[in-house]
Every structure is written in structure tokens, then in C-alpha cells.
Image (cartoon, rainbow, N blue to C red; front, top):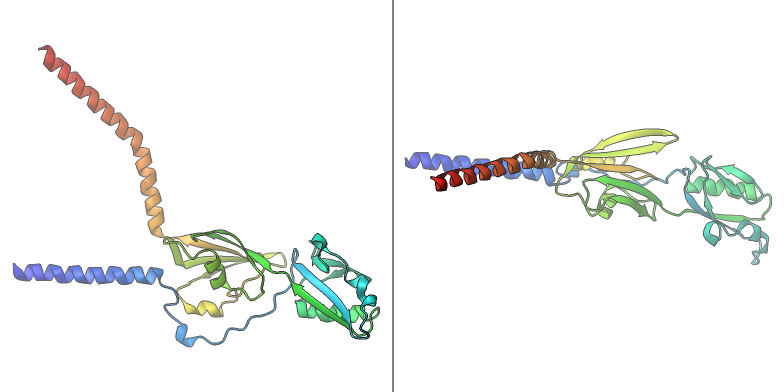
Length: 257
């Protein structure tokens, strides 16, 4: 008998340890790959339709900036030098008119405008800055919705943190990122438990990325059970009512005898 009890205790302990390890594997991030990580290098984002830019021009030819006044006009919302790339991927710029800019980085656009405007300005200096971008986070996060980033250096960890982290039912190994580039939509599956995500082509976020965190099997089981309970509730109520009626009827018969 003592051996049987001891055996059951050992089995119980082993089962408990297995369950704990299984849960840990489901919830912990970066369980593998950390030792092999190299240095991650951020890249300049390529400009896309709808991006907001500030473009300001200066001259080194004189202290007076009067000759560049026409190049620093008020843009959107009355802010000097603020432009929005239209749905054709163009900007309407002083002196040179509509200019295709989609696919360029801010650095490349800066050099292009410096060359184009040097016909009108002596020794021009051009400053081009992207005014942030947004991504959309859906699914099993604590605060879903559109997240805004002021810097181009934003990544998957940043967006998950801005969404309050994953919910308890969020699947760490089932994160979907959908990216649209040049009219083509591409999807990527990401496992947050594997630190190799730092080497993923979608670790650095881009404009209008959509991130969806899948739900665990536990949530679907709970939803199914909840739906089953709701479906059975009317049947249970009717059964209880019939049972009560039969009991009342039996009591009346008994009292009438």
C-alpha cells in the first residue's frame, strides 16, 4: 500500500512538472536563439503614399535666407514645409512641380532636391524628415488599435509594448504581420519565443504594417463551452419548469386524497 501511494505521488509530481514546463514554453519569450544573435542594424524606410514629410531649404551663400523663402512655404495645417505624398506617390514642390518620391529614402530625396533646386538656389542645404508613421495591432493584445511612432527605428517589440503586451490568451508562436509594398501584400508568421525574430525581414516595422496576434486553443474551448452553455440554458429552464410543475401536480393529488 505504501509503495502504491509513493508511486502515485511520484506520478503526480512528474505530471505537475510537465504541465508547468508546457505552460512556460507557451508564455515565455525568446526561449531560443539569444546566444547566436548579432547586431541588428536599422535601415532607412522607403517613402510610401500617405507619408508626411517636412522639407526645409537653406542657403550657405549668404546669411540672408530671403532667396529660399519661396521654398519654405506653409504646408498642411499651416506648418512650414509639411507635405503629404499623394496616392500617385508624388509631391507638388516649389519651382519643380510634381515629383515622384515613392520608393526613395529621406536621404535619397534630400540629395535629389538639392540637385534639382541648385538651379534656383546657390549652395542649397535641404533637410527632409519623415513625420512618423502608424501600424495597426489586432487580436490578443491588451490594447489593440492604431499605434503611432515618431521615429523610423520602431520594431516588433516596440509595437507589442505599445499595445500593452500580449494577453494571457495570445499565442506567442502565432503572430501574423501583413505588409503592403508597391501594391503587393505579403504576410509573415512570427514566433516570439524564438529570438531569431531579430533577424526577420519584418522585425523593423514599416508604414501601415498590420500585426495580428492569434488566440490560444484555450480561448476557443472556452468560447465553445460558453456557447454550449447558452444553447442549453433554455432547455435547462424548461426542464426545471416541467419538473416544478410535476412536483406541484403530485402534491395537489396527494393532498386531495
